[in-house]
Image (cartoon, rainbow, N blue to C red; front, side, top):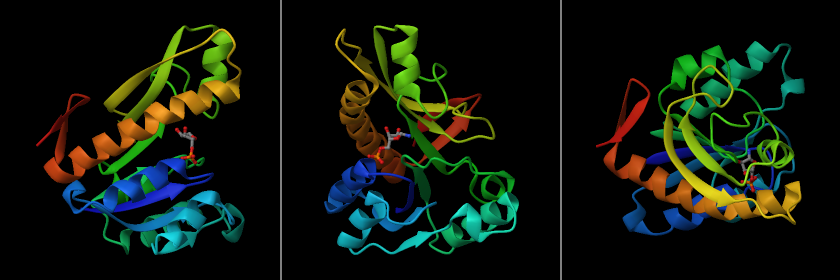
Length: 199
Ligand code: GRF
């Protein structure tokens, strides 16, 4: 299966997927990696792996809708079977979902529906939960609201700050992402009434 992975930051989730794809038995390859900004660690990781990369910055387009349509087209050109938003800090819009909806998954560092948005770990810590985690879901037109494919629990420790908690979440998140994306790629999946089934 062909994956296109979109990133905005360090790209350690992308790196985990690149490492997994190096094994033929995984059944997927990263056809391209894209970002919404220049100079991300994620795109450097893709380049080191010899994976084509692209950048679409909002400020390169007259409107957000133009950015969204351009991103949809660039991604489509790589003919992805599955698109993985791995730390991509932009909301994809109507054109992107019209073109790719149902084949876009996003990993979020909290147990959806809890703590959506840009700071799941910080929000979980501020709320005082004892368990948080990571969620892989199929992207819909909401913010971190799509059908859940997999989740992994992660304990919150008394001495945690947002950074230490997020790092602990990311260890579990990367493993969940690699295992789940691999199954989706090898077995396929269907969604019925928000339930995602493999096969
Ligand atoms: C991940 O925890 C992702 O869920 C969140 O930002 C982090 C990205 O980490 N949105 P990386 O860029 O994959 O290292």
